Image (cartoon, rainbow over all chains, first blue to last red; front, side, top):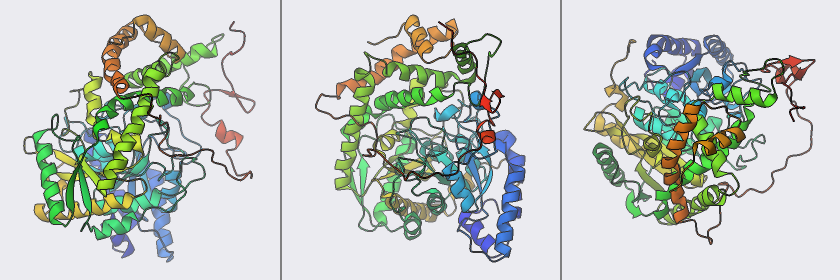
Length: 498
Length: 98
């Protein structure tokens, strides 16, 4: 049962073939069996999940009309506030904090009766591409336990690939939903900026952060997308417009006559041969399905990574100032006569990890007087140029595509001491965040040289999220008929029973 | 070639309110030489004629109706406080530090 898609589980629940309590318990058992090896979860809310499941079952027994995903379990990235449940963001500075309120994403999940199993591991405050920056230890990729599951949302992607949950929530600031999806053979979507509320999402870089759905199929991702999306007065940057019809698009999967633009700059040198081969193969399948493949150029994308590593740290240095040891979280050095400033200094020394400190210092520098124009100011101009590149490209194509990442999953520890090499992982995902458009990653097969999953990225214009779902569904269907079974069937068997 | 000395990093760490060991200061100073070279590339294309973008949405002010809505109770607001007293956050000494 746990290997079903979320929509299959939902259908079984609706038909009375199983109950949410049984389904939830099956996932909790799976977590018990395999999570010692995977470490996808930082906290498992056994009691809360079973209580929520029992409540859905009771509603169903009474014949109440329920939402499409009612009773299906989900794994929540630990960056999302959930009332009464520990929320750490992978950081020591928030260890033990239990939010007194629900984020809007969580409120929407509860409203849709999606059962929340627990909180998933992540790079501290979502800064990283490997989940190695978690203060609570790394998560392991179910395809190969010695490799990274991507980051920052590596706990969510690993939970999906290990069948610990059929649905998960991620957040994507520079690729933290899409890159983990790519390296674990799962699906992840970064909606248009403003499409899903950021209220209760602990901020890293407010102009880039976007929560989104993760699952094992394009349709499941679309169902979760519609469950969490929509205007929220609590987030001033939330878009007040109808949610794109992503479920209908995922169900139709029609790409006939669509123009698909291949971004010339997001391929070639630096991309692993197996990644390029799977990408070319996917393009052929989409052409066979009736799409027209065109080439587009985005000359300023080569500056995206540099601009990102100025903008995101700048915003983070400001956002993370709230962790000051005064109102919640860790407090260190509060002895008689100690000043507030010394308590802040000591708390932030102990509470933050290496990468978070690195980015706060970089951001503080980029925003300091005398350097502001040269660094932060220039990065903002690059942001304009990248957005213009997208606008021009979308005049020639309905969606744009590229490999999601240059390589497959690397080994845990391999890039831990080389921040620049680590940052290069996000080279193809960052432009999407800079422009605030939508992006999806879905599995396109395994690289011949290492047998590891490769991701295919689809990018769609602002609030045209349905387009990436149409293309994703078409490609998924073509690949499935080629493979004869879902890609995850090729993943190694983990400790627990299938 | 941009670089940050150990003392520059120490000053930034002070501004960012992070205590740092000597080893951390030296390591960060070394790393920043490489990182700043990489990010300084933005200057190559950031001409005077290019408008900066601070945010993906063209928003100005976003207002809501001025009506009272439910909010956290004092108990809830204080539930994560490291220290509290008389329904208030108890904080270390702020005044009288010079």
